[in-house]
Amino acid sequence: MKKTEQILLGIFGVFAAGVLAGTLYAPDKGERIRKRILRKGRWFLHSASDTFAEAKEKLEDIKDGLKDNIEKITDEMDRLSCCQTQKYRFPKERQ
Image (cartoon, rainbow, N blue to C red):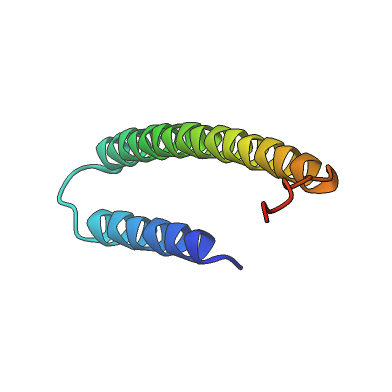
């Protein structure tokens, strides 16, 4: 499992434990507690999906930048290899 997956599972576990502890020690009626849990669960999922969307967008930007850099490097390597295959003639030294 990747480190980010472990971190996300840890965050989710802490969230679930907090919800459970809040449910056990809550003085409200069961119906109010269930509504509160659903609201907080939806908030958590919404914020997590926003975070994933932002991370995906940033990774796409990084990927595009790397792709551009690789193309530039490849073009430069092609240009340099072309120059190396040509034979250069140096002028003869004057005597």
